[in-house]
Length: 104
Image (cartoon, rainbow, N blue to C red):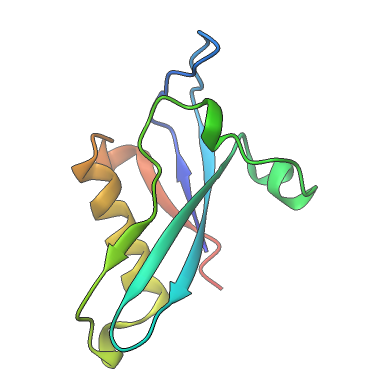
């Protein structure tokens, strides 16, 4: 599960990144609580090659997103992508530059 992002993000190194591959990690808690982790890579190949995430150099809030009170029928891969994108938009990204990827 991932999101292809073409929002430009500033880095702590003074260089902007024009696109990223955001891998979603889902953490199931007890009850109805779920957390979505955003693991950011320069591109999908970096993820595939087990390279390090770049979250720590980006000037953007990629902290885990906690989702509460979901019904079991609301927990689908597509819905979790929608929730993750909605949260990134709330944090300041442009919705038109976020595309669902790797839904299977």
